[in-house]
Image 1 (cartoon, rainbow, N blue to C red):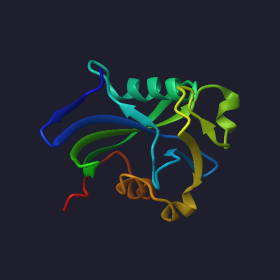
Image 2 (cartoon, helix red, strand yellow; image 1 turned 135 degrees about the horizontal axis):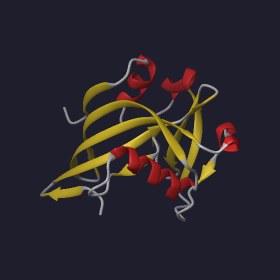
Image 3 (spheres, helix red, strand yellow; image 1 turned 90 degrees about the vertical axis):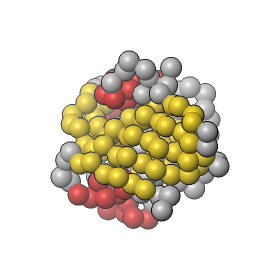
Image 4 (tube, one colour; image 1 turned 120 degrees about the vertical axis):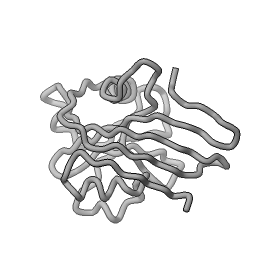
Length: 157
């Protein structure tokens, strides 16, 4: 069971995401029907730690095994989506694929769970400002290169 709690017009979300970088390109997931992208990952399940969450999510979504290399950030993320106010706690890890051939992947990957609207793309870190990545603080985290960090990202101001 995902840790998502609805409290009136508010949602509390506990989420974990992963940074995977190949040849100065970062893997992001994109809903082809939306104008933004984000880091791959998903909601933490009850009794599950954030590192296990990203490993499980990448296995479910891409069919790939990853190993965690580093802890990058905790983001307290406040935003609105579809009429709801969200308070999200986001844990971000850096990881790499375990299989040798997967470490060379730089092509678009497709969701293995049947979610045809989701695809996983590589974007050049040198052109990161050209992309609409959410939460917006992800760009600052990637460019800072000083980890771990704790950020409060409030888009409801």
